[in-house]
Length: 128
Image (cartoon, rainbow, N blue to C red; front, side, top):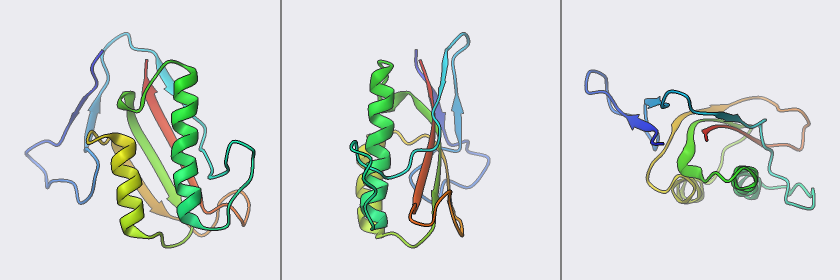
C-alpha cells in the first residue's frame, strides 16, 4: 500500500513542511487517533511547549506502533498550539517525525485546549 502525497502544479507550493494532497488507496483500513497531548508515558505533562510537542509526536508513534504502522502511513495531521514554539526545534522534530514525507497538515494557534496546562494537541490519521 502506498499513500500518494503530492503538491499539484496548479496552485502555489506549500509554505512549510506538508503536502497539499494525500490520496489513500482503495480498500485501505483507516486508523484515526484522538488528539494527543504532550504528556510522557507516565502521564506527566511538562510545562514547556517544546517538550509537550516532542512528547505528543512520540505518543502518536507509539500508538501507531501498537497497530503495526509507522509514520510513513500517516496521511493527515492537525496540530494545535496555544503559544509560540521554538521554530528550530519544531522543524527539527517535525522533519524527523515525517522522515521527509510530510502528510497533509493543518497547524493552528488556538486560545486554549481541554485544560489550561495543555499547550499542544496533535491529531493523526493513518492508513493500514
